[in-house]
Length: 342
Image (cartoon, rainbow, N blue to C red):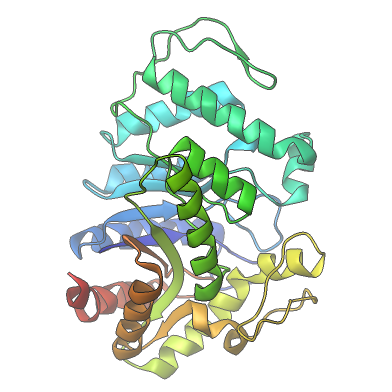
């Protein structure tokens, strides 16, 4: 199984790390992660959030392309509906060249209303807009000599794409969990990467629904990435001291949207989150790999038995976790956990 790292650059006002410092943190630890054998680097996206999520994963991946040589570079997830389709196409093709063909596009329609309001887009049209944009990207990528397209949301004259992509096909993942979007992913023939906000039982249900749809369309998925928050140190109490507040901060957006009725989040006991207050680490701990190497090995083994992932994407970069602690976690996980699953 492959192991990758994820960065979200959540930097709340008044926190220990500014955005500038969190970017410097990635620049310092990514070469280490590559040397330790991590497969890829994944970058998330959100906009207009008070706790400071990164709004442009492609720029961060361009930086990552320059300081790594082999790691896969993945947007996980880029909200494609928020972008001008031609600009997105050109940016993806450029990044594919900068990285010598290491790019992967994780994409989703989005679920945060204020992101669409801020871009002047209709929230209610996000699913149709998303599917048409992905149709355009795939068609243009396969035929860069003529990217002409005529649709409801995308109209492009017959023009060439420059630079031409390195990869013959644009690798695509869908970051979705709703029944309709899982079916659309299966129909398109792309893997799905489910949100880390879900419990293992919820993910089992999502993957079962997705695989049933894939079977109807004659598609056999070969990738199953699973995202989990992780901080693994020799001292469990130290891991929880940093990882507890870090995971609570990362789950703040999920809790806020659940409290507003926009997207459900349930705690480990199955109770719906109805208040926007910070969530206690203990209430969600089953979906985190925060602790010592032994507990991390047990957690990974449980995920393998329940979900059969092909890649485990670890979000170790958390708010207010110092670079030295992040580097120790990367090293501890690589040396004390990964070898058991080689």
